[in-house]
Length: 293
Image 1 (cartoon, rainbow, N blue to C red):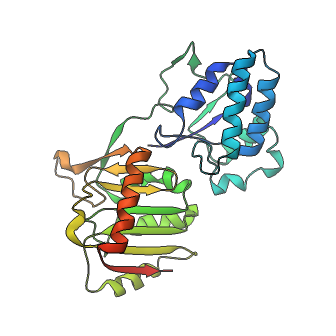
Image 2: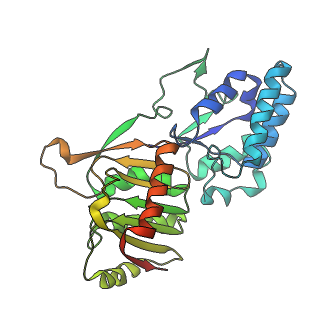
């Protein structure tokens, strides 16, 4: 559901690419700009300064770049931990940086006119499947299929929250896979909100602890009343969010529509509301909390 896109600073000789960046990136759009933030902004700033754009347009772009630079909470430019460790000696210029990075792990899309890899033409998008983010996506109700769609979120996140009133924790392949993959990608905390308690939860946690090989906090919050005010199921982090119509439980394939769940992107206002509600749950409506640290 999320795309990792890198953008050539040289494109900002054309004001259209500023509009593209401003309107088509961020968690609600399903795309992150993958660049070395400080160096990319400096290079882009210089391109804009030396361009043939009018002063008003230059001022608009510079203001936007300054805002990106200063805002510590922005979720437009995101570079995952593994990319930050690659090619440090070549981060000064995007053209060199992106070659090293793309060889390390391919981007979903590279936007660059000088590399002839652009698709922005006269204010319209060419048909490019690596750019298009559908509003929703059918996903087979299987642990591996869930994970394929969620890895892009894990890749950019430190804290993961899974909200599903009906998800069982014991013997759950998805939960095991989520823990395993999160460790590989540098996630530091996983919190699961469920309404299903288990009298043997402590032994369950001991089994889960054997799956944990790095420093990661795993917490299960058991909420009473089956989330009467939160029906939808979510997986979200500090930078992205997915809603799942049938949650994150698995189901054998029977040829029915319910063999699949529908994943969709979640807007900031909705996920902020969910966060606030979960904070209230933890204070007022929790049966018990199980934690591994």
